[in-house]
Length: 132
Length: 132
Length: 132
Image (cartoon, rainbow over all chains, first blue to last red; front, top):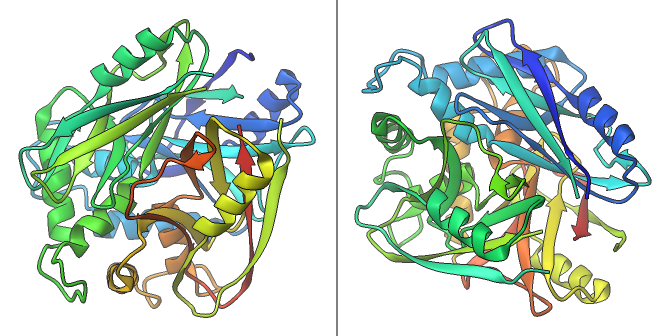
């Protein structure tokens, strides 16, 4: 059974998709796993994990802008910290992604990247990675 | 290989987030698993599973109110049971959560709780828990 | 450790939920797994995987229509391919589903089906299935 890999992240904007595919690949290499699955987990409640296009940065821009419009920062919220919009977006993205490992590599589609989705940054964050 | 843990839940409102972290912790203790992952699965199509803040109940209130506004109960729906909004919200939350287990404990963030998200209650519901 | 099962899919509409439960059951039978989990993974960025009602086709119709309204094809998007709405919907559904396997069968609820959710079809697509 492999250990849990933990990495520190630093987000730089309030809303930001951080491509962490290289971190998952680095952990996979260290783990020496050849076949199985990997769980990428976000231990925060105003950020999440998603898989989406890694090529045109406008895709991420469009996603962030659309979520901001659908779930604006200012709204009919009771939560006094003022970040309910970020909690909502976090649950919509989900707190983890599961990816298949085959022949020692991540079995992602050619356009897929693994993103840490920040909705209440900038902040110091963590991500956990576990291989099975 | 551990068994599947099944628990009965009773939701009390039409829309409700039930904190089931203690159930997952109870099953983990019984399973005696030290390292691995746990899958928490909702076998219903008008409810789901999400991970979000466990501290201020206003976060859950804001999430439910925002989803009600974005996906209202009355809408341009064909489904005759009148709960299309609940099916939509269920898919947005997802039918399961996967959490890492380390040193015999759930490796959650300090503010994270595991929620059964009811969107068409009150009802008798079930949740399945499996350790790997 | 079982192999990764890969299947080709052909979607026929721009937006479509393809019920692939039978494919997952077929792979499960071939794998001979009795107890564990299965990960169903979509290697595309404008399609996803979700679990929802398998009985009344109006549920899927209502979900697709509601997502089209909330995240329309024409919008304030920069991405030049014109399918940002599909990338957004893909992340909302998620790129995978995890289901528990018990006694050689999928431990789904009675109304649950596993859907490949196309948002930018018609296209040739793939789905990956891995048992643990």
